[in-house]
Image (cartoon, rainbow, N blue to C red; front, side, top):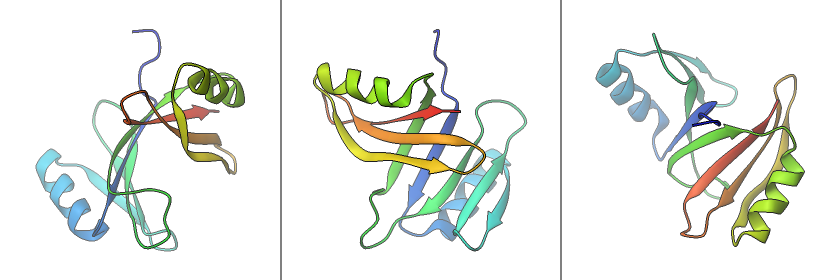
Length: 116
């Protein structure tokens, strides 16, 4: 695999409950940023990620999204659309971390793209 996942995101209806579940299941340490209600995982091995909460008006429904690294986010989104995919969440900036977008593949699966 040339493009391994760079981040995972678990979006839950009840983030506190979900963080407790995954923390105990995988023995993860999770540091919660209360201002965003988002917990960053600290895993011994593997892909870094976080657990947040969805709610009314959120573009992120409950579920899991793997983010794959891309060098050109806008180009990758356009390529996905040419291949039959669509945009689920338009590109947004994470100050100091890069830009992300979420697309739907040809089967409706949510896939994240991340340009650092």
